Image 1 (spheres, rainbow, N blue to C red):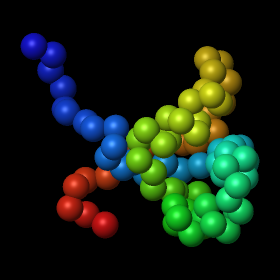
Image 2 (cartoon, rainbow, N blue to C red):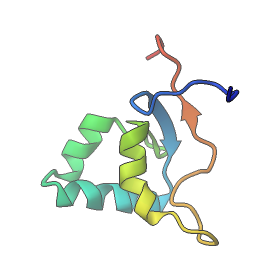
Image 3 (cartoon, helix red, strand yellow):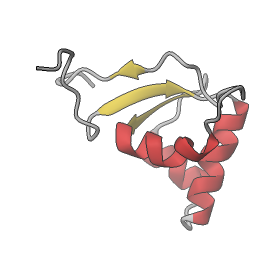
Length: 86
């Protein structure tokens, strides 16, 4: 049996984006046909860069930007949203 905490990738995470992360986020949604304002409204990015996404959305948007030896476009310490909290 594998030990660990079960986690569903449909659940939400909070991630603090750096400037490059914000650029990647906006570019992704621009390609999808959304404006920056629409993306911000949907995902409620806070002024300090924190944004709440489903884990699979986070992986889809930022996965291609993650490389060994390259700075991350977000803070490496993400927060897993606890069910039942806003």
